[in-house]
Image (cartoon, rainbow, N blue to C red; front, side, top):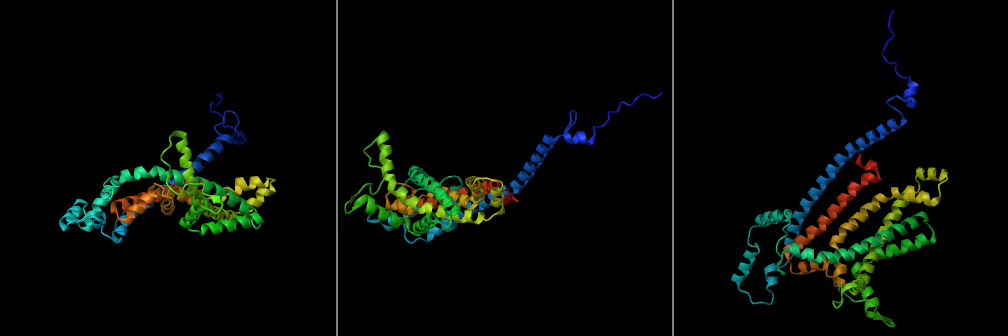
Length: 367
């Protein structure tokens, strides 16, 4: 007489599919496995994309170092003679200064020393200020970050909002008005607009009195909260100048990008599902139209470090833009080169961050 088999009977296929008790699979586990496989596949595709973007950023930085060295060597003028302008100086003293600043060395030697110093954070010694370039940049950087940072936040938010409204109601009175004003302001030179604001709102025209300072960052005789108000009072005109030009660019790019998306079938499908127009715009159309605008916003963030040379010069703002103008007028080669590297480096970093954000907005970018 045979004993019954002790081998367990496998569960029916239907039980496995339905995830019956005692089985190892089910809809939840299958879905989780599918999500995990998709995430792993996306990560494998993202790594080569990340490596290529990092390599591109490193090559761009190397190109910046080469360009910053040779570009400003063709600027006319002798830095040593410019430093001693108005002071009787003998040929021996001029030679001593050239030797002190390394200007008597061969070009290749100057270039290798410059690259070695820049890669280690040593940007050299300023000719006219007789101070390390890094310290001069660190001293002026907060003023530039304050001015251009506030301006970038304001005109990015304003441009995105108005650009979305203009595109969604394209052809209407609001769209035509917004587009006309934006095109006009985008074509206006920022320094000319700044001078115009100084004449109208700082100096005063006719019965209109001067309401704001003509330049500078603060009056210098206030402390605490009163000092913050004084700085804000001085910021109004330069910030208004930067916002007027910057928001126009953001508006036009956002409007054009959203118009390209408005004919998509996915928006028709979303409306067919009964979604309200505001929900279709906010959840479907705008996210897909953000890629070009994200690029521009990150570029604008990169310009926060560079500031605006013309606007800072017009309003005598004590930032990096004014420092660059002073360095270029000598020419103060180490300071000009150091500022150029900082400006270009900030743009490279922001472009790299924009590239890294793209795959999260549109996974097709990393394929």
